[in-house]
Length: 191
Image (cartoon, rainbow, N blue to C red):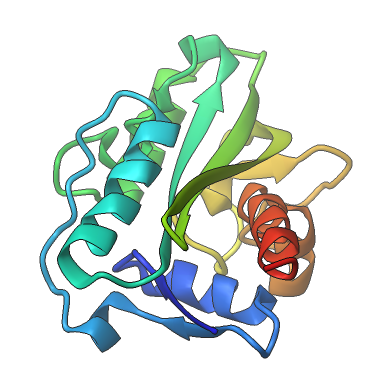
């Protein structure tokens, strides 16, 4: 089965590609010849994921899935949330986003947070949502060189390392994206 992952994020493509079973051939937006930025104008993760999947279905007429992920920090009233990629500005600069989170949490001791991923699948004229959540906390400084986005400042519950310090295999097993993807894979195995 061919399935488009509606993302320009090469890190996400790599993570997802490692988790999909061999009978699913992952097609990137680059493979499709899609270089335009897909709009993410909704106010929820669910709606943004669906917007991206619908864009590919409408313009390319192919089965696809898209995701949207947010870092939800309790002490910041759920921020950055749906605005995680643009928390420090429209340029989607991960380093600036991390710096802003650490600055906003300066002198705050309660640093509980969670990552949430929502995957929207468009296949066989159906639109289905899958989600995954991982609980954790925000560090006081960046740690680790692996991963991407907020990974260097997020420590999942029951671990001492950030996502950027954990081996990719472990991260994929416990992460928000990994959990949502397992639900997607289970669904796809039944069709």
